[in-house]
Length: 478
Image 1 (cartoon, rainbow, N blue to C red):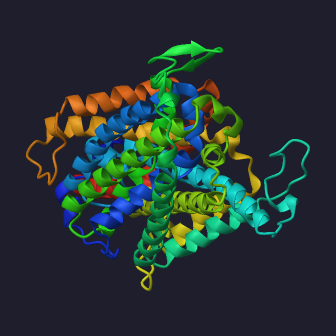
Image 2: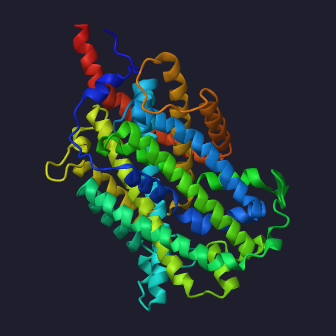
Image 3: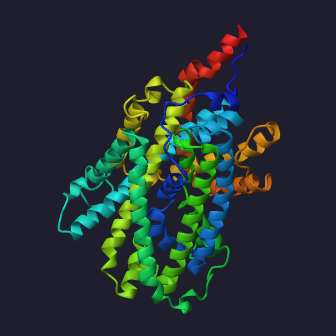
């Protein structure tokens, strides 16, 4: 029997297999995982850049981005209810399009989660070092950034970034129960900080600051760059990246066919309300043009305007916790993707080994955790950050297309949740994601192709021969 690289997994066989992972996650745990991934630097940093791009109309940009992410989220929710197993977009692509497509997206997601966690760890380090300085504690400058990060400043290694990734890797490796407790606690504190900020600043809104509400319209050019609600939606969209990692937890979720869709959509809904509320308050308290002076910390512009400088340290704590949960969810998702690929034979058994003590893919979690920590400590990640975006958007496109295909090819399969409006829903998600992918610069495409070429060499030299599905087909063909 000829072995094909497009061989597919059978959904009923997938569901029938027992999992060695421990099921402890419920709806709100998943919602908090999603919020942990979404509410991070976006709400504390990107709101300033977005306001300069769209003015107060940034609120509409966040709504537009949320609607488009919601379409992709509905597709993830349907797949999660149809095939509630670990692996997220990797597993869904294996079911819908076959092995080689699944390997490509799994390989992309590993890059997305690793680079994403490493990049956020560098931002976390900046906030952490600043907070320590405010408290009179100083880390040697040479240990606060990778070499060559800041021109004219001698640095060798980003120690805080390295340490936070290793600490989170340890938490993830010792069990999903510990992971959810730490994440739930940090998300609750982070939400409390955001709510406190809203309560303390909402009284200082001046409606005249909202006029004109959309100074650059839907799309225009201002000072040689794209401006308006739609360009700002691209900035806002990347604030939502991360909710897809929630679907990686399927085998550790109680009643996943119902719980996963609820968790995904709840996290998107709560995050959207918070983003829009924060945007309206910030552009209502301060004229949007002022954010040009506070680009890295737009929240400070609001605190200066209201005279509530005492809140700045609390907001810094919220930002640090926000970024910590982002790192946690991305490292968690990465460990479950590599676990799924190893279980299928596409990666060595090492990555799929489940610790009898902790019921987690312990070795694989630490392998990628150490690599990610070293990347955060040693590499200037500014030039690589857009690779996170292209990996995520590719996953969104394949999952949305997969829902279209599975509705056509396998209408008989049980779905605990059905995305409404199919085929319109996935088509809108695909169009939006393709538009954003097309807008990425050519250097990102070159790096993406290089990473893809490395992945293909691994697939054809190792994965294709060791695939468990291929071995099963070979046995059947004898």
